[in-house]
Amino acid sequence: MNDTYGIATDEELARLRGKIGERVEISEPPYLTEVTRDAIRHWAWATGDKNPLYLDDEYAGSSPIGKISAPPCMLYGFSKMSIGYRGGLPGVHSMFGGTHWRWKNPILLGAHISAEVTFKELTEYPSRFAGRMFKQSSHIKYKDEMGVELANSDSWGMRTERVKARKKGKYKKLEPEFVSQDQLRDVAAAYDEEIPRGNKPLYWEDVSESEVIPGIVRGPYSPTVAVCFEQAWGGLFIKAHSYWFDYLKRHPAAGIPNAYGVPEPPEAVHWDSLLAKSVGVPEAYDYGPERISWLATMLTNWIGDSGFLEEFYCEIRRFNLVGDVTYGEAQVTRKEKTNEGSGRIRLNVLAKDQRNQTTAKGWATVLLPYKPK
Image (cartoon, rainbow, N blue to C red; front, top):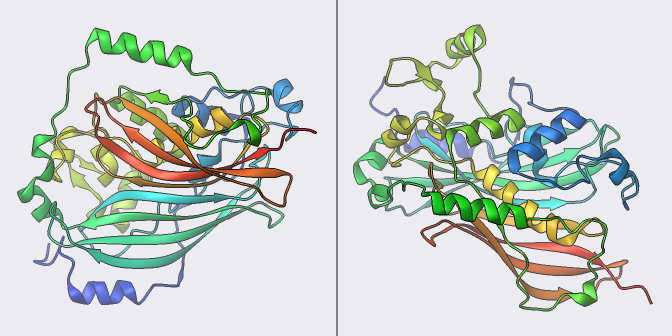
């Protein structure tokens, strides 16, 4: 391994910046290509979404959409680069930073979906966590087999020099916490109270500025939760047996030895605490798209069958460690009439952990029907 591995050299940065504006293609096939009942069900199970719009044919058939549809963030599964292109800068650690979603149409059962990814931006930021740090972002368009755009997004990752991140150890004071039986009972009670609005419309006129919407709880986080999400999302490097060793022949740097000397993919930080510690994090931690999907569920639960989640911007701000509980909350900040048959509501959105630390933040807009006259 050369002396510049894991370092963001000026030469490598110049090479990477030369790709800005280019469409990015990879040889790895997407995890999902079709919106099937099984894919929808697995996504709903993995994210804790009990909305019958996604799971019940008879119920969905009588909804405004008229058939089963998919949770909006399930589009993450239709491209390995839905979380942003992270090529270049060999050995420089990559962490998911967030997504700005813009949905155009429902994601209907049976649709065949393709994604087009364009490398958009590489921006350097000051960092106390590592040495040099960069935001690397991409623009993604999702279309069905008829060429209809279902959504587009900007997704980004933060690239940090791995060795310096270990030495500085920003998160040494963030320690995993034991989950008590009282906490487990409180979480179970919160799950019992989580009920999607369903077919009772929420009208634009009935929403007030500064109104706080029903929140959501997810967790406590565990490696099992990570595995469940992997089954729905597909991950980036999840391969086994000959498929993994064939991949390592093409990309030898992708394998990071675990405690037993077995090469693991970089995303093993989500279930392997020793590997997570090697990049400066005190414990295995969740997937950013997973947390964003939880918050999207909070929003779709609130707006009901007649509403539409139009836009969601979310930044991942802190790690969500094994044992952590996530509490989602949102508050209405603005109401706006449109020329369409629905009005727009803007909300601020937060995720906090049991330490009351903000782990994700952003904003969303939803469309709600006007009250019949």
